[in-house]
Amino acid sequence: MSTKMGRKINEGSSAEVFEWENDEKIIKLAKNKKRHQSMLTEYLNSQVAWDNGVSVPQPFGLVDVDGRPGIIFERIYGETLMERFVNQKGFNYEDVARITAKILSETHGKKIPNIRSQREAIIYSINGANYLTNSEKKLVVDILNNIPIKEQLCHGDPNLNNILIRDNKALLIDWRHASIGNPETDLAEYILMTRYAIVPMVRQAILPRHIPSEIEYYINSIKEEIIKVFIDEYTKLSDITSEDIDSWIIPMAARRLSVGIIPKSEKEQLVGEIRRRLKIYK
Ligand SMILES: Nc1ncnc2c1ncn2[C@@H]1O[C@H](COP(=O)(O)OP(=O)(O)O)[C@@H](O)[C@H]1O
Ligand SMILES: [Mg+2]
Image (spheres, rainbow, N blue to C red):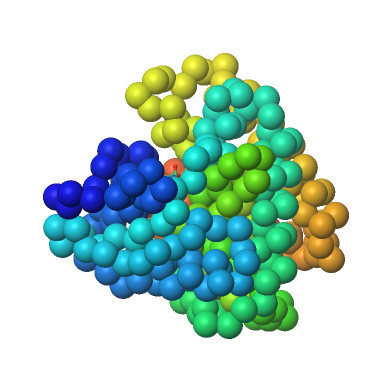
């Protein structure tokens, strides 16, 4: 164990976060020792985002602690948007949706090189998932290929645990899935996450406390409203329309089918949404 490492602050699905050296830095340490490549990618993406004025914690470097790859970042004193949402029992959902729309629209305003382009990776994921038939996959890829390519900075995983709030200003963390491409990918991802994954994410956030069923019921009842506020706010801040966003729901839902940590029950719901939407194309 490194002497520079302090108390554990938090963790996500892929990493643990500890104090580092002093009270101004943290280390994000991969849970899996084999994650050197993805930590390097995250570090380089974060550096490019920082260099281009995106609202992110400053990255300081890559290190190795007991064989685990880690990244040193500026420590952000604040809360995640998920913590804010949970602490206020979901009652500030409009605020949460607007903050997310704003930080994403600012990020998408950047056109920067040196980050991988996204289209091929999405097609690769769609073709790699098991839940759709080959002809359905082909249809989804055709739909995707009919959408003109854009070249904007996309985050790739805009969930509420990846947005930190400090002094009412949002910062985006966790840049491992960043790419250059169509910003609607982030928007569709946020919409699908809200529609199908928000309750399990809230449950995870308040562990080991038990999520009361009335809160679960309440969150389910406001999900579509969160999505509506998010789309309204984002379309106000950009020249993207709600139809532009909607055309990305099929491909991004199909892409989510290849994500390992998404449970089978959610994937079945995603397949349901894809098939309902594909009907008009057949
Ligand atoms: N720079 C930072 N300052 C303070 N807390 C952070 C910082 N980076 C991450 N965290 C905390 O650690 C959690 C997990 O970090 P994240 O980078 O999202 O890891 P994962 O890749 O596992 O999702 C975040 O939700 C946040 O609470
Ligand atoms: Mg994360």
